[in-house]
Length: 160
Image 1 (cartoon, rainbow, N blue to C red):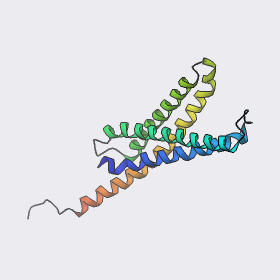
Image 2 (cartoon, one colour):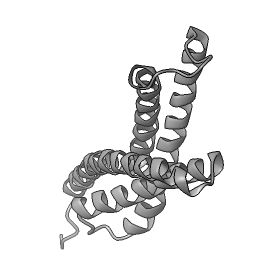
Image 3 (cartoon, helix red, strand yellow):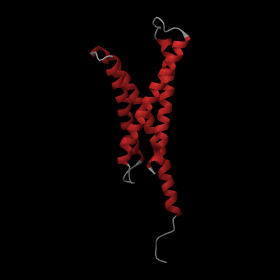
Image 4 (cartoon, rainbow, N blue to C red):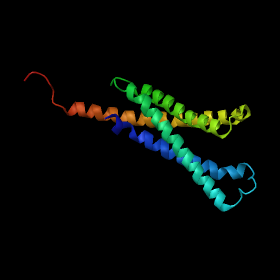
């Protein structure tokens, strides 16, 4: 039941991450002047694909964070939609931040680079948290409505 209700959150976060990564890498040469060798079309296409791939991985890890925290949280059926959305936002922010802290550590571990990577990490974590909260609230309402309809369809268990 859990996977059926919340798998769309994972899918949409992955797609959203890929689209945002693609758009950022397409817009990057418009904001920053290209370095030597970056102004050819083939390099820009490769950067766009790389941005989409990194964005998809960020969305996938953020979605996995949502499912990892939301699974234990929803063991009790009486959890509110708002609480599920907050837990999902926390999981998505943690997952997206984990990816970008890893990228920052891997690319250059110097202290100076943290001035660049921490704002990026915070921005992507914020976007993932907002998207996850909205998507989870939608999925939770849909699941609650479905459970409510099923309970109304069952015959009463009273005395005959």
